[in-house]
Amino acid sequence: MSQNIVVIGGGPAGIEASRRLRDLGYTPILIEKEPFLGGHLARWDRLFPDGVEARTFLEPMLADLEGIKYFTDTEVSSINRLKDTWVVKLSNGLSAQVRAILLTTGFDLFKAEKKEEYGYGIYDRVITNADLEAWFKSGAAPQFDDVKTIGFVHCVGSRDEKAGNRQCSKVCCVTAVKQACEIKERFPEANVYCFYMDLRMFGRKYEDLYLKAQKEHGIRFVRGRVSEVSEDLDGHLFVKAEDTLFGKPMKIKLDMLVLMAGMAPAAGTQALARMVNIQTGDDGFFLPKSLIVSPFTSSREGVFFAGAATGPKTIPETLSEASAAALSIDRYLKTPVKS
Ligand SMILES: Cc1cc2nc3c(=O)[nH]c(=O)nc-3n(C[C@H](O)[C@H](O)[C@H](O)COP(=O)(O)OP(=O)(O)OC[C@H]3O[C@@H](n4cnc5c(N)ncnc54)[C@H](O)[C@@H]3O)c2cc1C
Ligand code: SF4
Image 1 (cartoon, rainbow, N blue to C red):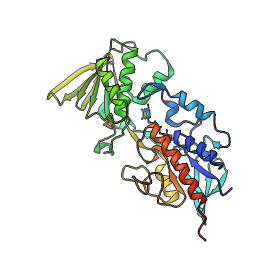
Image 2: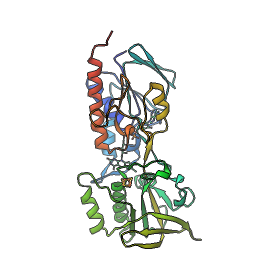
Image 3: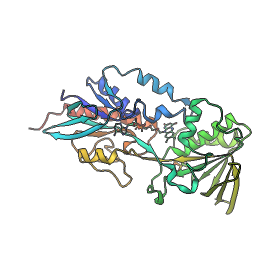
Image 4: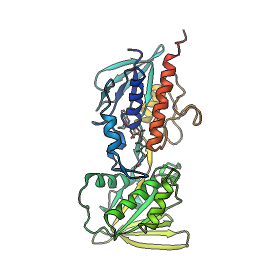
């Protein structure tokens, strides 16, 4: 029993790490607060950079959970240190005594309604990147019958001191470009604008996607912040922005505005940090021992991390961290306990 490991958070990081630990001969216990496993991957339709369907990754992962005990709709009620073990009590009444805990609680989408000037939750035609994914994934007909001019606003709740987050969320530039291309594939006649501060297309093939957006789809990239959004009598949107490259103010009428909400720490991060007595950074994400050499090791013995619980990450980065964390836990568990 004490060789078991509790993995908290059943997104891509938690599932992948649990599978690796199972392959190494352990019996991980995976805890997920939602009624389903898969985390945010279960909510996305197609993935950047090449548009593969998210389900083609998730379904094989979910079909390979033999040997892993998992509980959905379950949270951790308390964690206490007992000699060289952790006693983890769950909201379903069960408890486990383990030597290692892996925190894979991921991220929450920034609450776009906090940026009142964009009108999310006030104007129907203002939606988020996650709403657009849900719409694509549902395969439903367009929610508005006139999607002719669409805007995307980058950096919503990221790189923004006023919103309490000066960090970049890393995945939203490429997500905006991917979603803008998908809009053009569905509505070839549409005029699409991306309002950005600067474009961070850091990954392999991301630049190709950006070129495709400009050359094949004619998407217009406007360098400048949107300052105000208002609604006219028939429900359409008026957006004020400034094109900082040309030094010109802009006012355009839009049928839909998509806010690229960034990645914020998961709601339970602080509570879990207190339970195991570890630190979070000033961005609110868990703080590893070293961001360079041990991004999956905490300052507390037997407590590890993987995935977006320590900050914005792509899915490939998340999966490799999950494998690396599983190997670190294996090494830790094979180290004799100091008496
Ligand atoms: C709009 C958008 C689109 C994206 N598209 C892509 C893409 O196309 N390609 C790509 O590579 N990346 C993409 N990403 C990034 C991708 O979503 C993340 O890399 C990935 O989800 C991180 O996985 P994770 O397991 O670390 O976290 P999550 O996916 O957030 O999973 C964490 C899980 O932990 C659970 N949890 C949280 N707290 C607790 C708790 N206290 N107790 C129990 N369970 C808990 C959550 O419910 C969740 O199931 C996108 C991100 C955004 C915002
Ligand atoms: S990835 Fe792009 S949109 Fe997201 S916070 Fe960074 S610069 Fe802004």
